[in-house]
Image (cartoon, rainbow, N blue to C red):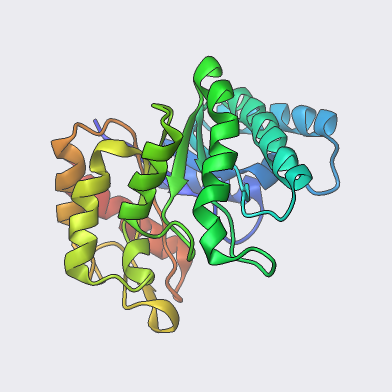
Length: 268
């Protein structure tokens, strides 16, 4: 039976309300955020204690964590900032372990003043390279997301994987995001095939158009060939969680419910 999950990102209200909705609606898995476990006003010891409480909340609802969004950023301007990001990612990995997952959805980083585009790849290679021994020894898996403007290209992701050279670095596939970044629908379908063998975690998302013209929809109501995405992942025997994400403007709870219905219909 397929593993069906729900992404906390973009869900309104509290974490507890999100978990209640996920359990009541019929999801078995959730993806949560590092900030759900380690608030900005917490030190690390406090974060560990709070993470234990979150784990109890999950257990009370019979929910499992598919992945933890690490919220890291390797596009930094100094050696000290890079070392901080690497050590933070290691600490966040320990929090992921407490809530029962060894998959972290990671970012390459975010475009910013002081970091030229020509530096992006080298900085990402450096950051993930510094994490390589840790994730391999501890058997954590880093799923690089295809979102934003930095890593929203399957060819770039594959080049980064080759350069880092770790079996524990793979992809989080968001089915809408390649299209959001301006790639044609034909190119998007090709990306699904290319990235498929490297996918560790999936966000099922639909919509139309790119950049400022982007319009989020429920699964099956946009222009994305979701059935082809599913086929590409089945071809490589993807065994992970299929997480629903919704960015439409109408009621989000209805959008997530429609997403769950679509997955139940198509993942047979």
